[in-house]
Each structure stands twice: as structure tokens, then as C-alpha cells.
Length: 241
Image (tube, rainbow, N blue to C red; front, side, top):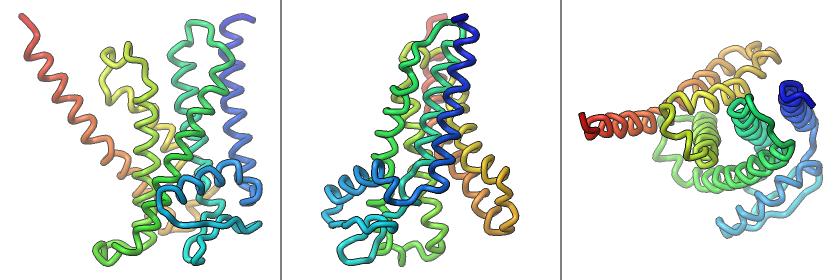
């Protein structure tokens, strides 16, 4: 196959997989999501010491019936985002040369593992939040839940992106330029798709959510970019004339 045609076909396949998984998730029940909810719940039990039991069409309920790991906790949107970040970076970095089709299952596997870990961390924190909510009285429960979700998911997305970066590219461009890819894909998934689906019709509720989605990732990136800039500046100062 012509390298350009192969590249285009691979790009099409990546978007087809993402759209297919998004469509599946939009109608999936907890029973159909046990492939991701099950491993997540097992890790949550291991780390939190709490027991959960599966209830058909509901999810994994804690033994004291105080917490439900439902379909919305599956993190499939994060899985799609992570898959797109890893796959598109692979394709655009190697657009001048042939890439094996194996990159699709490989990047999906990395995205799946990252999703299970991110979900576990998010749920474990959510289990502890009620004990400390009184100390965060300036935020409502919904705002706190939204803040936690964005910080955890975007933080893991950035960590996954950086951990899978090839060392040869880390000195070629600034950290800010490299992180534009996960940031833009995250915005597309978290805001672009809801806008296409007319989520803005919900009024103030959507725009409050959109404000969190826009600002919190930037706040997560600022320390990383500042550290990278300081490191580069020191390197320039120590270079011989």
C-alpha cells in the first residue's frame, strides 16, 4: 500500500474506533461495562479496604450501600481521549514513514491501563471526600466532584503523554508545544462533543461546567511549563559562549 494511503487509512481507523467506542458507551449498561468497571472496582477494594458487590443494571454497590460505582464511573470518555492522544501523536510524528498497524491495539492497551488506574484514584478520593467536605465549604459537592474529576483525568492524561514520549523528542521542542496535543484533544472531548450535542441548551449549568473544563487544565499545566522554562533558561546560561 502507498505510504500516504496507508497513513490516511490508519488515521481513519483511529477515528472510527473512537467514534464506535463513544457510540457504544452512550447506550451501554453497567453489565456491558464490566470489562472496565470490574478491574477498577477490584483495585478500589484493594486500596480502600471496602467491599463492593455487583448489582445488575446498577453497578458495583459498596457493602454499606453508601457508594455506587456506576456506568458514569467507567471513564470511557477518558479512555477515548487517551487513545486519541497516543494514536494521533504516533501518526503525526511518523507521517513521513510507514507505521505498523500494531500501534492501534498497543496504544489502546496503554490507554485502557491508564483509565483503570485513573478511575481507581478518582474513586478512592471520592470515597474520602465526604469526611473532609466540611473543610471545603466554599465549594458545593457538585463543584468539588467536577474539580476532582478534571484534575485527576487531565493530570493522568498529561502523565501518560509524557511517560510515553520518546526521549529523543524531549529536547527538540518546548514542553508547552508538546502539551498542546493532549490539551486540544481533551478540550475537544470534554467541550467539543457536548457543544455539537447542544449541551449548551442546559444554560448556566453547562457554562459553569465549561469554565471548569477550560481553566483547570491550564492551572494543571502552568507549574509544569514554568518548571520547564526555568530549566531551559538555566541550561542557556550554563552553555559556553
